[in-house]
Image 1 (cartoon, each protein chain N blue to C red):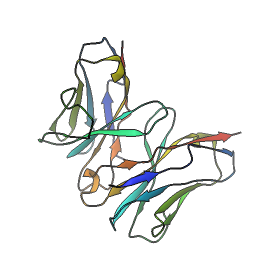
Image 2: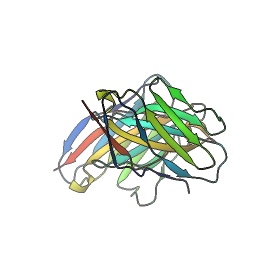
Image 3: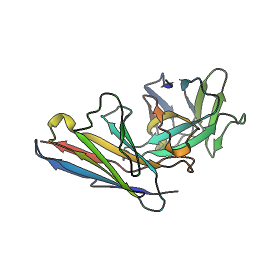
Length: 115
Length: 117
């Protein structure tokens, strides 16, 4: 199956700093990438959908100025958490898809801890 | 808006036994996909099985099969001959068919499956 990577797998940052998470589709072109947030023992919460070359579409309640998403190429999307606070600590998962693909493919996730 | 409901927060099964996880959904669409995803402790999401709504035949993947009841909007997952490695969170998900893999998934809250040796 198709492979999606995320980097870093774990990151610890200090409150007030920004952190960038990369999501790459390694062996296919992903016109659409999705970013999810998952709290412990909870389901995945969709944060935003990004289409290559366009602005991301954010779900209701997600601050677009805090969670910056860039999808500049068909194989790379980035999520930047700006001015991170401890409440931003979570597990972030990306998935990649496209109109010609039958399904989405998930990355392994990034655990963010803000101290 | 589409919704997915998993009414069993936790389930347990004895190794080698069979367990069924429940899922219901609500949609006004006639053509869509339904999925079961497994999330083991590693937290990597793994696709277990996929069902296309227009196909009447229930999907099967080795020990995993579904009971898809379109009229009742029910999509249960049966795991036969349960193995210790089946222990995980299981998420039921819905997706419209319109834009293929560019459509967002709607997830249920999940069912935590424990397999007892």
